[in-house]
Length: 232
Image (tube, rainbow, N blue to C red; front, side):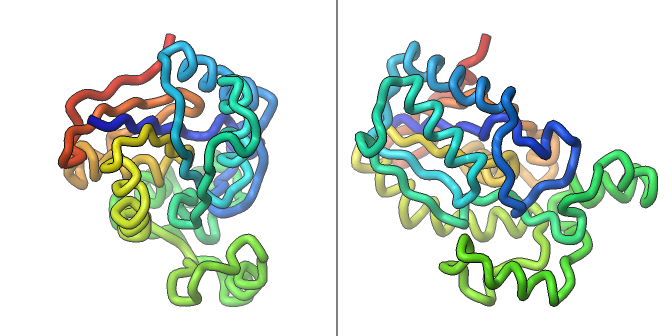
């Protein structure tokens, strides 16, 4: 039996502003900081203590880890934290930085719904110049050129997340460790899709709230025996 806790980062500054965020590295809003701390308290109250944590390269997830562990009275360095771009949020391409309501007014609700909620449809890509600028960001130095996206669908996120699950997270769980994964709405949707064996249609209805831990108990084959949100 292994325990896996999934946590979507607290509300970010761009969640608050209703902007497409994706790979833009924005921080938590004050509400997001409160959500991260509350998540730590819920995990502590549930008696869950991580043996290690996996998170993305993005500061809103990293900051959530810091605040949650602090609330759990776990100091810096007491729990190993591994970061990977494979747990990053979905890359929203040319939509990044745009206001969601204004984008819907310009392109129509149905088109924006396709970009946001379909499984395989990608949003418009960033330009080649924008990709080159992204390539130069130190944050993404470890990402191979052929994996650094111009944009992504949810299908793309599943494809780049699963190798990390198999190569890193699954191994930790098979050793009986309690593992926390602190990431983003779409990278966690991809992981839940895998764990719960959701179809492409079923995952489109899945929404993961910010700052609310989702706890799985897994058997020896890493199939869920139970799952629950730690919420009020």
